Length: 65
Length: 172
Image (cartoon, rainbow over the protein chains, first blue to last red):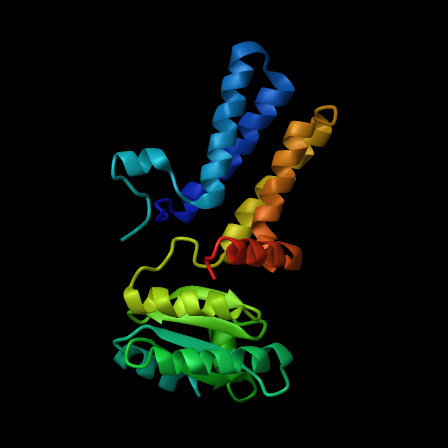
């Protein structure tokens, strides 16, 4: 599993993930909250490992060559 | 070794270079030294080992931003690719040399400072949200897991458990 996220990408994902989790658990309700939670967790996980499966699927990378 | 000599030598090197920054008074360095020397012999011609006495190369240490020893820095094509701080096990060092010799460098080649920062920062933030949202245990556990993922490689219990697991599964 080769990293395909740049540092900026990872920081943005981590921040977005935290914000979405905050919204999902603290402010939103119903289906929107569940979606925010799931997306938030996925963003945090991909930020933590530095690998995005979606990028890999489309052979895309934000890492500078 | 001074900075200029180091970079000149590095630019001339066509093989992966493992730089071991050590000091004579450093206990963990003495532990790692014979393992590295053995591996250097074994992988001679494929991976180079440079052992640099930190006491004699303060300017170089400062240039390389080395704040603790032993520190291993791996250079490939003249660029730093892996940095390992602290004494590492024989199996971990062997894996490192093997991956450098074969060119199959694993994605998880040590945790960088940025990795730790992202994981720990996100972990604290998630755990904080967990506290703020009426002690949400799910978020607290995710936060704790993220924080642990930032430092797991330095946890002796984790290392002991994974070593045992590898022994049981025949990976060592």
